[in-house]
Amino acid sequence: MDEQNNPETTEKKEENVIYIGKKPTINYVLAVVTQFNSGVGSVTIKARGQAISKAVDVFEIVRNRYLNNVRNKEILTSSEELTNEDGTKTKVSSIQIRMVAA
Amino acid sequence: MDEQNNPETTEKKEENVIYIGKKPTINYVLAVVTQFNSGVGSVTIKARGQAISKAVDVFEIVRNRYLNNVRNKEILTSSEELTNEDGTKTKVSSIQIRMVAA
Image (cartoon, rainbow over all chains, first blue to last red):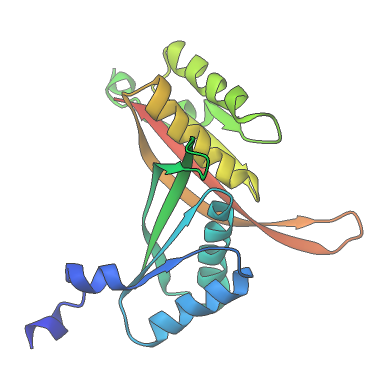
């Protein structure tokens, strides 16, 4: 039962990722809250481009309105290169916010 | 000479703040690069709402194209309440990215 005593194994962490896209912000807020309520210790949200602002909104709403014990463990940014349909390349920034329940 | 041994005094940090608004991204990139080239050790960019995505772009472009020795020291998010002209209140997320030259 070692696995139960250590919920932060790498495999576990990778599972709880929510990608922020074009749906309303509240959808992602509820997805994060549902994950935490199901008992996981950490949830990561990822977003690219314009959705980065929405990712920060999701984190702030979760923390201020729903789960006061959740805090930001780590915020990382990076830059990804996408290939467009016409073969040209576009660089797009991305963000990754890892939240943990205290 | 204790102060010299501790370059991270609060006063120093507060000075080099760049607010990200509606201008083109490259304007803010050059503002950050100019600050670092003038010899400061740390620059902070702040943004609210939709400009948050642009702040991450600015940081990624500075780091990848201009100053490879700059790294992200700290990324903080918060939530601010603004009062609209009609008296209603709106919550808006904000981000703060502190960069240091290694």
